[in-house]
Image (cartoon, helix red, strand yellow):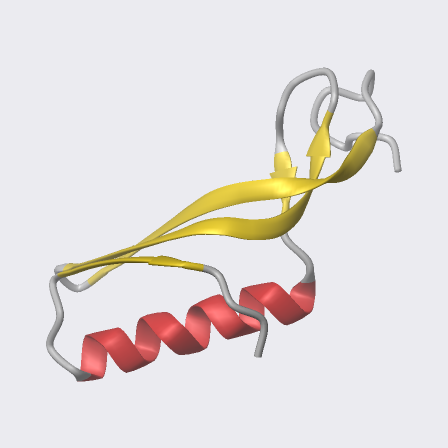
Length: 75
């Protein structure tokens, strides 16, 4: 797909590092499947992966964690 940010590049399958912050929690998830623009580097995570990331963040917040770094694993 054409990148909606730079309007110049095309996206291709790759990975991203996603950082989520909320109420004192910082969750860093590495190797998340994403579409990555070959021009500007913008990363697009699909809906399924985003839902899983948000669920992981919610579970970490409930557990009282402040910092959590992990590698992505498909559900």
